[in-house]
Image (tube, rainbow, N blue to C red; front, top):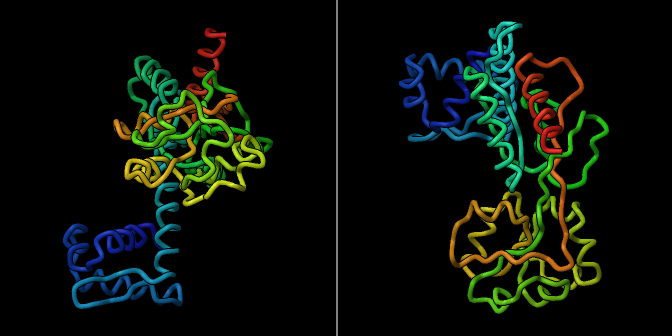
Length: 293
């Protein structure tokens, strides 16, 4: 599979129309169609369902789209790393993180680093810890920031000076919004939305016997969509306080757990050769931590 053909494939997948994709790529529609058929022959599978007005992906096509995007991202990242001179501080630093208060800390670090090294750019990827670590393994991320407990034995790690406070967001009209805190038994009898990562970060243990008594109505990955459900007065979502500010609505109220439950933020990266720019950024973070200690 050629790099160029994979980029063509991704354009067709995005546009769901061969003619439109060909126009964007500045090649003829017959040439693009022929290359997509040759790609199918090379892989021995059908990648597209071809209709009169649209071209959609088969299951194998969706798998290739994920893999092709990873290949393109890694190829472009590798090219950029070699184009940046060995003594030059520039290029792109790829960082993966969940949504939380830690982003304000990271934003301050990025701003100060950019003042010293204006040629540096950042690529931010938002997802949970499992997806962040997966991308670190594949080499498409330089650095990950993981909320809560996890297995960091495969990585170099730095605990950051930002803790996330756990609680729940509830509809403003819900009686729970008038309480100062959420206790273990408060959510029994309510529909509850749970972060998949939250279950492994001690939340289920914190609730103890009451966790099995709650109605787990939905699980979620990142908070925004769960907050829409809360805004619609369907139920309450267990979450960290730092992520709530992303959903600014007077209809959604955060209440912390009592007794308090907090989670650390840990910066992780692979113990392997890195670009001078990424190494310098990690050193800069460590220096800032030492200054604030």
